[in-house]
Image (spheres, rainbow, N blue to C red):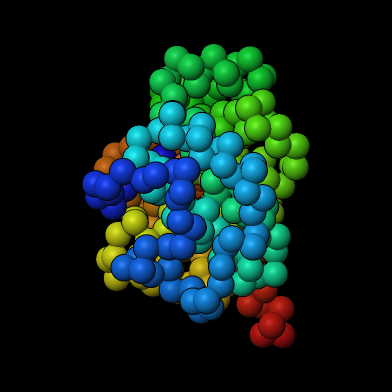
Length: 241
Ligand SMILES: [Fe+2]
Ligand SMILES: [Fe+2]
């Protein structure tokens, strides 16, 4: 649902065996610590295995997006004193099921006991986040619930989602390849200020796009927006009292 405007034309083929972790210097995440290095935060063996799998299962353009999400999620996690390694893992694996066909998504979701509600049934692509967590578990042995939840929640979010999930949700929407409109630049700046406010505003940005383009909206996306808005307003009241 939130995947709608992919923006970067990645014409070069990434050599994933030697993929550099540093973000493209032309693409700014507005990260306040430009010298932060992701290489300290990931386990190379795990990452290489995932990269090899991705190289065989997603096109280059998608892989570039995934690498930018990995980078931005780790940077945000570092900024908010969260576990940057877990953020990077979730970022790297968030779109494992992105290119699965509808039939496969429905089969895997049903086999895992996920509820296929009417919006999922009409748009099985929305299941790629939940199914991605299943693949992360089954293919790469990921057991950490915070990492699996961050993969699960990267598209629709969830009311009450963890800060790590917020970070991956924001990185997926706002990684530099998504575009450079003033609205996106404002959201990117916001995500270094307050996680919940950024999730609230980013949800509204996505919902507005979905309304305007007459797409179905999953109720979970609305619940995410309401929850994040309330979290932000409550904190504002606490600070104001
Ligand atoms: Fe996705
Ligand atoms: Fe994505």
